[in-house]
Image (cartoon, rainbow, N blue to C red; front, side):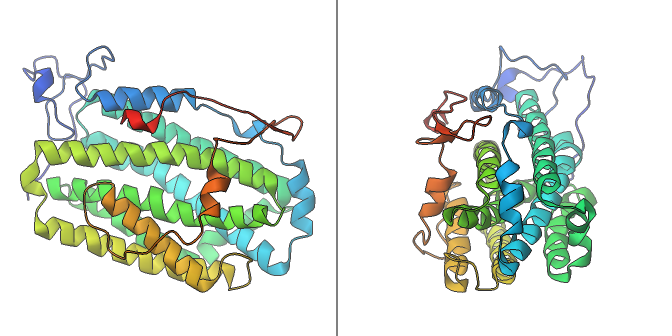
Amino acid sequence: MNKISTKIIYNPDTTETLGERRTFGGDPDGMLNFTKPKYEWATKLWDMMEANTWFPKEVQMTADAKDYKNLTTDEKRMYDLVLSQLIFMDSLQTNNIMDNMNPYITAPEINAVLSRQAYEEANHSKSYAVMVESISENTDLIYDMWKKDETLREKNKYIADTFAALGEDPTDENIVLAMFANQILEGIYFYAGFAAMYALSKSGKMLGSSQMIRFIQRDEITHLVLFQNMIKSTKKERPELFTKELEQKVRNLIRGAVHIETKWGIYVTNNKILGLSDEIITKYIQYLADKRLTAVGYEAEYGVPHPIKWVDDYASFNDQKVNFFEGNVVNYSKGSLSFDDF
């Protein structure tokens, strides 16, 4: 495979035309011109992300502080472990997007959207800080859990090693695989953690946490759309990269992710959380994996139906929203673009 280099920031002598622009491997001049994008999906996505702007302290967490004290031992353990997992992944992703992915992307409008994503990942870390500070008397216990819990540490190492491959060996194939790895992170690892939080809200507990997660998940959907379109655009530009061998590597990534996330989901719930049995967790993660594959044109790997459709209801912004200052259910809408635009 061809080695790739990071883009040149100041490059006024380039002869690259708009039509010659590439997701990676191009020769950009360094100018970000929103009036002349090649990838119009990127500017539409920027508008959607901008319209969805929100701030963690808008979410009322007072009731959660009381709820947390009344959680069962198993519910409290799951909440803490999932929160520690989410903190790690958003911290990793903030740096991964800016330091590991964006330097190789040579389309300015995609660079901009990736920069916006990195901001949102950092904003999610701020969100988790609000959650931790609301429920914990010792915040370090949760922040250090990812280092001390062996199962969580094993899971996080698998994720980190996947992204490290690009930095260690920057080839055109590895950057495509990194795009798929981002799909796995955003669309499997995060979603399984979100489902655990929604399970508590389904029982009438930790409603503020659920609302915070709902906003975070809405951001993650745009991140999924971003990398789906990066993969599709690359496939049009470099169809020779999308071989049977590449598909097999992608499927191996998916299978490994499903294995480790299933193990993690069963570990954190311990078969003691209402609505999340070991069987349901296994099928849900397989279902998510299939969604990630079919979104970019690959056939499903597992062929399982959605086992917990109520999760989608909790994640939805279509019906009920929370008035953050009064805690009442109201219509709360930010953004007007539809994903049909993509």
